Structure formats: structure tokens, C-alpha cells
Length: 321
Image (cartoon, rainbow, N blue to C red; front, side, top):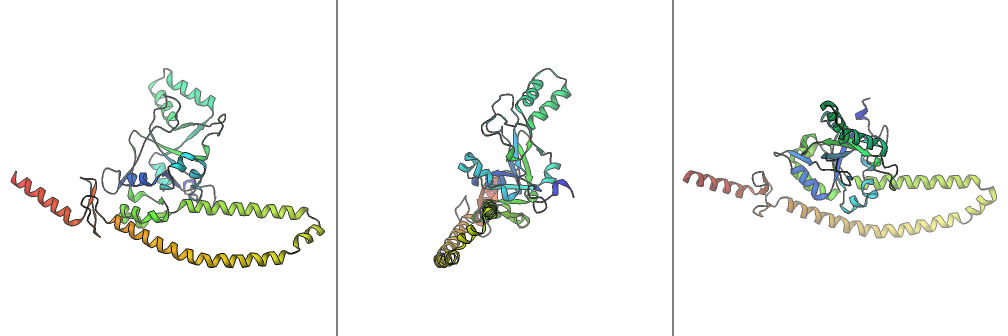
């Protein structure tokens, strides 16, 4: 078994993907940000919260957190919650390692200080290059900070002044709410058919709820173990009546839920229809078309007629000149 390909179903804390977490508008810019159609770009930047002028490396960040746990990025970080970071672009870990993406090195304050101090002293060219490469991957362990750092992010980095260019065909996973999938699939075109779309926030809530239920069950089992027979019999008095009342209440809630589900289904249909119309309405001319055309020269979409009329008009002008 290759380490980069170990999946959560074999070892739950592992992932065979590296995922860049981002927001709703940002993921669209990322998918459209390449040098040509079918290419994306995750732009590099100096990390948020960098407290030293000596760290000037621009990096693109990824996480090896398993997909079902990605919701923690929103649950733990207020900044990410404010930015609605429920979106992500993921690639196979093998592909990323081949693309020179590397895991972040978490160092305690003393060791990190030594690394930065050494890099600023006079060194041979080879030593300076090595130390700079290490600095680009280094991050404080946070052992003395109130929040104890960011090792939970399980960060990987790509060091580059511009960012991480990728072909759409290299994408393995897109994380987004279900209602956003249609628009992102239209951006990705035929490549979307081979991409796994996941509502990672819903998965996270399901998994954490399962853990909470398991913990609650264990606590009940532990408490039952210390009760004597008389206490257990006292507990069981009226148990059947209580369960029956809960069943009746559940039936009542279910009757309400049927109406809610019908309304939610209708709302979803209306939302998807609006998404479909918006996705097939050209940004340049405002016309609706099933065959919308993306033009890189304008960075806008055209309907086929307007695109053709524009090209024909341009051709006439060039002939007249």
C-alpha cells in the first residue's frame, strides 16, 4: 500500500487528497483563473498572521484533512466561518507530491528562531538556498500561544511567487453545497463528469453527530454498570409508557415533516431553475442560450449569435482598414 494513496475507509485519519479550502466567489475565480480555458490557478500569498518581516515567501496552501472532517475549518476558525469557507478544490496526494507540494514543518519557538537567525547570517549560496527552502515550509508550533497553534490544519504548501496552476482534468474533488454544483459543473465543462462533488459541511455534521451519539451511548453504559439491581428496576418503571409517548410525538413530527419536505422540494426546484437560467445567460449581451460561449479575450460569456456577430464585425473592420 502506497502511503499517499491510503484512504479514510482504511485509516480514518488519513486522506489521499490535498484540498485547497476557499469561499464561494473565490472558487469560481480559481477555476477560471488559468492562462487558458481548462486551466485554473490558486494564487499564492504571504500567510495570514505572519508576524515577521523575514517571512516573505508566497505560498498556496492545502490540507490533507479527510473530506468528512473539512467542516472543522469553519467550526473552529471564526475567520473561515465569516468567509463561508465551505468550498474546496482537491487533487490526489500523489499528483501534488509530483507537483512539488510539500507538508508544512511545525517548529517550536526556539527552533524556529534559530532557523530564521541562521538564514539571516552570512552563509554560502548553497546553505542560504537550503535554509530559505526550509523557511518557506516552516510554521510556528504555537506551544506557548493561547490557541496552541495550527497543527490541526495539517497544512501542505506550494511555494511560488504566482501560485499553483492546474489543469481541470487534474481535479479529483470539488467541495461545495449541493445547490452550487450546477454552476461549478458548467465552468468545468466535460471535466466535471470525472470529478467527485461532495457537500463536505453536511458530511462533517453527520460524522460529528455520530460521534456525539456514540459518546452518549458509552456514558449510559458506564452509568448502568455502577447501578445495583434496585436502582435499575426503579429506572425501568414507566419506561414503556415513556417510549410510547415518544413514538406518538415522533408520528406528529413526521406529519409536519411531510409538508416541510414538499415545500423544500419546490424551493429547491425553483432555486435550480434560477441557477440554470443564470448559468446560461451571457454576461456580455444578457441573452439566454443553451450553448453559452466563454471568450478569454473578453473574460466574459457570449451567446453564439452575438459572438459570431462580433467576430464578423471585427473582420469587416479589419478588411476596411
